[in-house]
Structure formats: C-alpha cells, structure tokens
Image 1 (cartoon, rainbow, N blue to C red):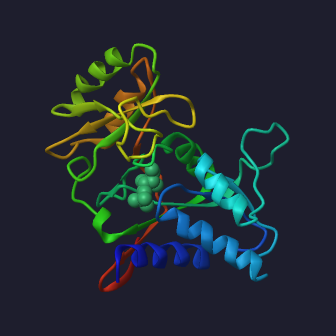
Image 2: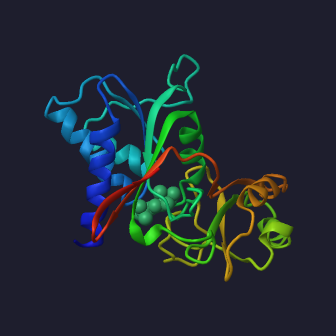
Length: 244
Ligand code: DER
C-alpha cells in the first residue's frame, strides 16, 4: 500500500471506530487528518452519521469541511457549548513510546492543541513512518512565536537546558505549512511565525522541554503534545495496529 493508502486506512478507521451520531468532533490538520475529515463528510452524506458538529483546527481544514457540508462551529463563541468535544482526530509528525507527540509540521499546532485539550478522547492517526524511539531527530520541533523580536526568541529557545543541542531555524514559506517554498517567514493562522528546532539526539525530557518553552517570553505555543494522546492508530505494510 502506498503511504497515502495507509493514511486513508487510519483516517477512515478512526472515524468509523470513534465518531457516533450527535457528537462534537475536533477535526485535525494535515494530509492524514484530511482523510478523517473526508470520511466524516461521506458518512454524513450517506446518512450513516447524523447531527455532527465539528470544530476545525485550521483554516484549510475548515475549508475542506465546508466543501464536504460538515456543520461547523468554533470554541470561540461565548454561547458555544462546544468546549466539550467528544473526540478529536488528528495526525502527528512523530510519536514516541510514551505516545508523546511532535506536531505542527502543518503549522496548525495551537488550534490543534487547544481543541485536542478540550476533547474527551484524542485519537492520533499515523502511518508507521511517524513512530520513533525519542522525539527530535525524526522531525524538527515547531515553536510558534511572536514576530516581534523573533530573533531574540529564537536564540532563547536554543539556550533552554532541555533543548540543548537543538538548532533553531525560522520557517520560510508562502504559508505556515512545511512547504519551505518562499523567502519570507511562514505566517500561521494566528498571524505568528514558526521556528523549527532540529535535533541530532532525542529530547531527553519532553514534558520538561514543554514547560521551559512555555516559560519563554515570545513563545506562543509549541509542538510537544505530552500526555494528551488517548490512542494511536498506526497503518503499516503489515496492516493496522493501535496503541494502547
Ligand atoms: O501539523 C500537524 O500537526 C499535522 O497534524 C502533522 O503533524 C501531520 O501531518 P501529516 O498527516 O500531513 O503528516
């Protein structure tokens, strides 16, 4: 199976297994999550799912969901009862043995994190290339920062004790996704920049690194998702597995 077929398998399975009629669903961002969004739209159209309300984690997921006719809402509205999300389904850039994640390859890490924090269940969907022994070497850690004095913040990130050895790089591109295609800084849905921190060796203590990052003035959010995962559905050439 191609990597796309693996992504489709886990995207569809997550929806089939965890999304029930009447639920409030967090829709993730990225090429794997897009298959989960596609499946929700398909089941709604077929009448196999009814009265679903979804909360998108990025502008591009919102656009995909709108095209599919998936009813949307947001956490933002005061009258919104939708801070109680039943299940959120999203991809990841790296998954360690404790199911801690690196996310943010697609630049949507803040809205993903807040939606996934509000969800009763957070189901991660990956092809097996995302599994790793320690976070860092397989995928650079995205950190969303204020554009104002970004260079100072970038240097401060590199000096954090738990991120020793990390090499920070401002993400360039026409949009915040990981297509580095432009010479201007990529700008997220929140109007901020992203610094990607590259590691040769794994981050020894991800929760500690997460806390140190949030302690830095200028850091808005980061791509370490620690202790948040309910379950990971993994598609590999030998079929689909799940942890736990
Ligand atoms: O940007 C993100 O957090 C995405 O979910 C990313 O982590 C996974 O994207 P992919 O499914 O396209 O690899």
